Length: 165
Image (cartoon, rainbow, N blue to C red; front, side, top):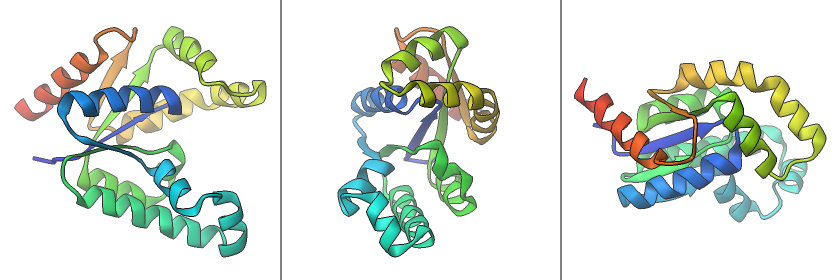
């Protein structure tokens, strides 16, 4: 049985908020890969400009590999990290991947709370269908979110059902 959980979703802040609540409920440590990298490099854009994109991608993979090898960690990753085969390999082999799938109404409601520019909102709306299909394919468990109420309970139920198979 895998002792780590990786929660992914279309909207970063929503996914992080729910993930933190689930980690608290399960008494797991919580980590966000992007936050860990930002803490380490302070300014990732300038670090990438100095060291190069390839170096930063290696650091991202190193961080994901480390998180996946620990025990009792619930972590979140931006969708960007899933485009790297090595990252995906470490995540899939070191964690139970849960996708928080928002229906259209919840997606639009949560999108407004993300504090994004109009351009970013439009971009997210345009790629939502494609990303939904990708995340659905990566996930071991898909939790359909039609409302924010009882989501932790729904996630726990889905985890139990997954391990009862």
